[in-house]
Length: 251
Image 1 (cartoon, rainbow, N blue to C red):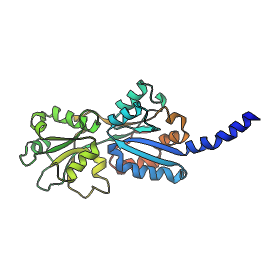
Image 2: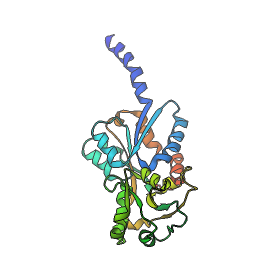
Image 3: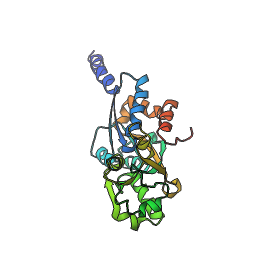
Image 4: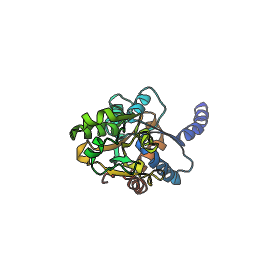
């Protein structure tokens, strides 16, 4: 009888936990996630979803220090693999859900974004925004492009570094930078799509921005987290990713 009472007492707590989902996501996903969570909650209206965005490396540090996230959506595969290696994530849950695209963007009409070398060397371009060159995959990709094209000596003195790619876009949007390397998903968002001009960077100039999702150890005990991870590969989610300029892996 005592065992039965204990089970009955625990059931409401388990159900409540399953209906709450905490997501840590790379900053490039900030606008796409609004659409993604809306689609997810069409079939999961009772699930309470909370989202925190930031540079992938910063989010990993938070998870390693015990931050209560269930799902981690990274701008690369390296950071989720790091969590797995440190025993902070479920190994078999790792999946590539999208491939990001890097663009150079400017809101100044006189700045030509079509030729990167000319843009970097243009004396009117005094500040070029990039995401954190260490913790943000889009920042690392921008650095890789500049080095590969031999533009680092010219670009280095002009760089303005944002904590993450969303802050980098804010620098460009507000005029605190004349141009910047940002995620295509941001400039295609409803908020920014009519502002300025952008040019996609040749993807062969940097490592692929393969975006990986993984369940944290906490998320491995949360059925709602597993359902969200499965949802990322659904037709509805793939449509959202494509709308925001991501490439989606073949299924």
